[in-house]
Image (cartoon, rainbow, N blue to C red):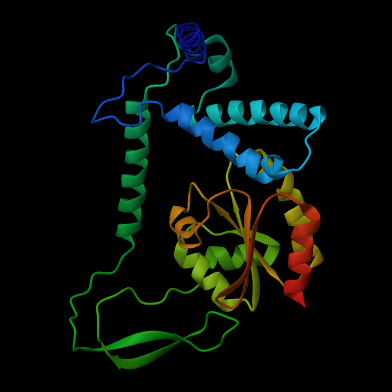
Length: 281
């Protein structure tokens, strides 16, 4: 029975275009696609709370399996960047070659993207040659609700990055959007500092419950103008996800100033609105 299952499972992987790669000391994550699928299914279980329910009906199981199947397929497309035709027929859409998940090329491509982003950010940095003990001018916020800066003479006690102001693009985004994206940890810190009440929404492109709750989150941001609403993609901003110990998506963190006061995971509309209403006071 076990041998038959392995054969069927290998056939299924081949039909999905998953390139076989044996696990070794240098390659401990050869089954990365399968582990990602496990992660998606576990996230579905947590967000639907099916594993915590006292009674589960056949219709609940059927709905969950349908959503999980869609989530697995969506995750597969997201990870491999495959077009629908390439995924269905197992052939490249431009060239007459099989479509396979080559994890070496995928990893190299992501590394090149990271290197390009790092190089672009480093070009905008200002060179400095000061050292501990020098007199330097430090930026200091003049008001708590905007980004006006004062220059203050101070002794330099340590070499570290000066506090960052909210970027111009983020300010422009704030004028016409009720929910704006926070792409790095500095933007998250500034967002929580300048807003008295704020909500951070941790989401992911491969998360089906996130797709269901996102429109509701947008509506709540317009309904409660006293609360600032932020959105964080856990794949793009992993530092913030680790800082807030995000183990599932969607997750919402409610803060007063820079202090988190509440946190919950799930896609329950009523529960989310109750937390926002309590935060607004």
